[in-house]
Image (cartoon, rainbow, N blue to C red; front, side, top):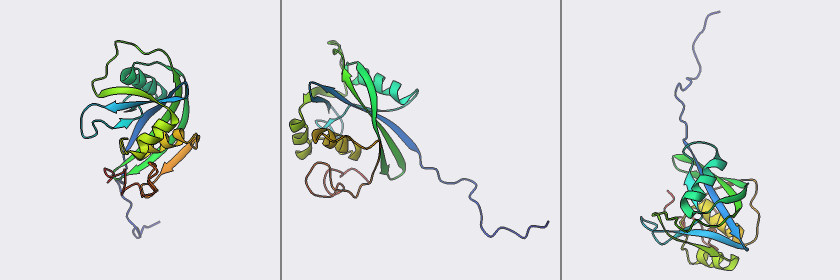
Length: 182
């Protein structure tokens, strides 16, 4: 059989959007959520959930290591709460959010990237959101808002940047807390 030619050209090197795996921990103790405040950089003074990019190993292993390294705590019975897909230009971010209780903190622990950590009630976490003192990442903002409101996130969530801002302002995310999302 003789080929006449292709009616279309297959792309030999299709564009692949890189995927970034992130682990985030919602650490609870006595109905309080642990938040960390950044010490330096463009977001110095802003609060966030303890998070890190997965470099090697499993996501649960990376979460355990990140919590130990960032906060000095050990995770007790970590449970995958949700996977949040955050669409961004040029990268697909998958945030694996674990919930866990914590053990005693290593008193000698110090993470130089963090100014401090603190335990927040639901009301205090909601206040930090409304004051826009949280790192402007849609996934982190949404997870803190869900925790503050007592809502369990869906097992898999896809967040798009044209939603209302999770800080509760009533404005769109990009015009409000998502000022760095481009």
